Image (cartoon, rainbow, N blue to C red):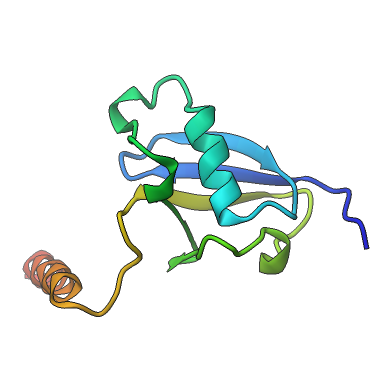
Length: 114
């Protein structure tokens, strides 16, 4: 089954900058990272990374593994899908480092509530 439609992605950096891209449903998260790295948008200079292999996509709060294709995500065709683009050496694992980060956010949340 050949898929002809295009997938419109709006990628958001941690800094809040956004850029729209168009991909094929057969493109994987790794393909997207490479494309973005090779066509790094003007205005994103401060966020430039050294390698596409550390670029990660986050969709609906989850990190996409490199072999996940856009088609597999069942995105609504014709709409722009928003994803976050972050630089991470490795995908998060439940290790002490992640634990520390989580504690930090809960602390700041509790302070905000006060």
